[in-house]
Length: 468
Image (cartoon, rainbow, N blue to C red):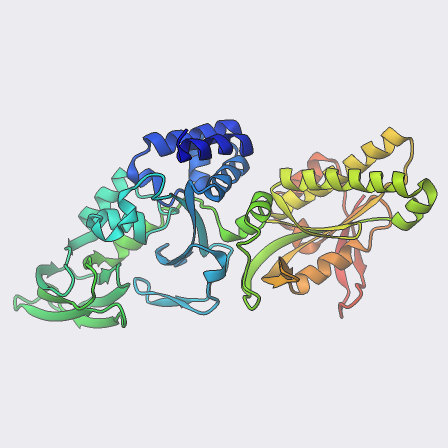
């Protein structure tokens, strides 16, 4: 048995079998471009498999060496890949600049960091493993733009037709010139290898006299400049001083932005950080001790087992220990099933994260039902879990050699949990106002009870909602 066959065999034992089979077929039969920067959510949609099982499958495949996992920093304007990292530790918290959009962005893992999967060159060599040999438009599709841009055949035809005035491949250390007719529109000369851009505001009376413009491409100092020219002929002189082939392209700005508005969902770093398989399998791919990654919105669920000390006294250490283990097992299974991840357990308490508040609420309701079931099986009613849910901004950090979260949102979520005295759940305003939450409460015939609460360590009272 070859190494690859052995890896695939292990994958079929660790991941969902049907998903593993689909991944194995992709490696064997997929076209080169299908094996580069795979969008796991798009793969799920095309194959009909559950998203969480697909994500888990690709994570296990990456752990086995079948795929390389990449964290790609995206421009929120054009979805261009500003930088690609093979580990979370490499992400910077300073500005990334996009030449095409002439903007700088401080990365947030919500929507600006894409997680994708590319087949390992040890498994199968594809064209994208040598990006500087890719034809011009393949470079744009497979290297510059993210997996969230939907560039199908129609979009590609539009890109190479109405959107592009001219383009060429310019070898390293060489010069070339383009002769083109400028329309009365805003024009962008963009080069994706060096991320260089020059903006041309074409305005005024048309001219028949040739106009001149010279641009130099240099990886060390990618220029972003602007000019005002008149509609009419232009001789564009291009000088590639970089050690790599460059791909200068002349775009009509408005048409380009319309085309790039065609987006599809992609796997974000925020979702990955709240994926249980990732936290279990990629424990080594943590943040550096001094990293602080901003998350603009994350949902936290805290639980605590009420009266656990009295429980030990009442039923004895051994029985109580078994009950606590059963309670943890039920909670952890529910968290994973509802697209959440356990950050840590503290004594008899659990801290978990969810990408969306509605997933956290469903998890909380299922936890409460699971405790009711455990109590019913014992003929008791003393296994009570207090639950609190809050949503808001936070920082992803390293604490005690563990990827963790820091900020007021975390503090409030922990304090809200302490408001519960029985099996009720307490949630905050951002949670109850989140999409999907009202529908869940209506389906369960639950009427939240609004009240103000003073939380320890929080200056002002906040409005909370009791879910009876």
